[in-house]
Amino acid sequence: GVNGARAGDMAGGIANSLARDQANDRPALLFHALIGNDVCNGHPDTFNHMTTPAEFEASVLKTLAFLDTKLPAGSSVEFIGLVDGRILFNTMHNLTHPIGATYAEVYDYLNCLEISPCRGWLNTNSTIRDMTTDVANSLNAVYSKIISQHTYKNFNMAVYSFGDLIEETIQEWT
Image 1 (cartoon, one colour):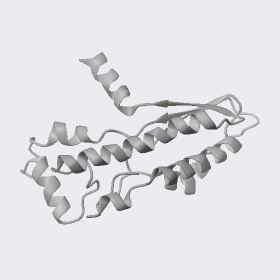
Image 2 (image 1 turned 120 degrees about the vertical axis):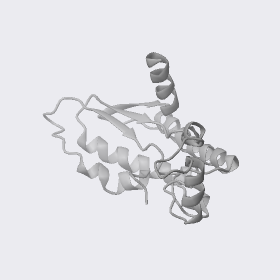
Image 3 (image 1 turned 60 degrees about the vertical axis):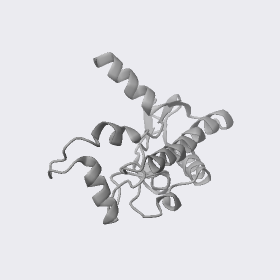
Image 4 (image 1 turned 180 degrees about the vertical axis):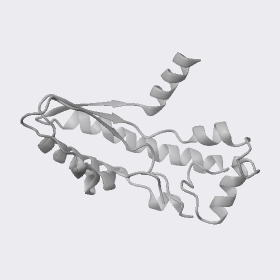
């Protein structure tokens, strides 16, 4: 399992929980941030269970079409790109997990049991981590494609890199 939503889950129902009075509400600022679940799964053949760019695009477009029927005119949809999950391994791998093993050892154990929440990034194999990031980046590219090819009556769109936002925050606070 995962701890959040994929693009398909957002289009398939989560977006429907949005309650707005399109005629009377003020413009809304909506953040569309999926973080990483479109690439995270615990399957041994993890890449076969990641969302493809075509699936991602179709799901995001479905979500946006729905939002255009709910958001008041003048609203903004801000896409926050998928993370570069390699940061988890790079910063945690040699630290001790509360169970007493290193995080790298815990990641290997979870993968061995086939219960990892994110086999692609919580993995001691750097090639798999890099390939997972490549898939995440291909999904992030979809946001810019959508912004360049689609317009909506009731909102504008922008995309922000999660990595850039984190880097800016780190620089500001260190």
